[in-house]
Length: 179
Image (cartoon, rainbow, N blue to C red; front, side):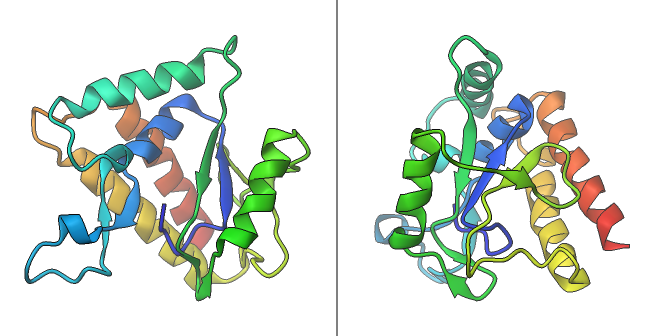
């Protein structure tokens, strides 16, 4: 994901939120997806990083959500920011060690500010400025973008209400923190 308001690694604890974050994956278009007249560096939402999906988005949402709900499988959701956090580029060297720590179960996640279902992996040089109202405002705006996206999907791609509700909680928590 390339969301400049998210630190290098965020853990999502709620299955519905985990799945809807995949459905609202923010990225930049590849050269194969170039659309004349559009800025190739503009962030766009590409559900589950699959621009070639030909079936209902709800199928992917349900499949991913069921993976995260099934405690026997022990699957957790992590958002890895491969773009920039605020103004600092997140490089592969920054995230490779984090991924190794996650796999080896050494990663120590802490609450992601005011968000009840999000945690992050603190990383030197990528401190999260929760005390900065402008940062919280930008984070709220990115979450509102996701809510707007899922709220306006056509009938073919419409997601269940729990997807909308999960992202609404994050938007409300962000707005509350921004006050």
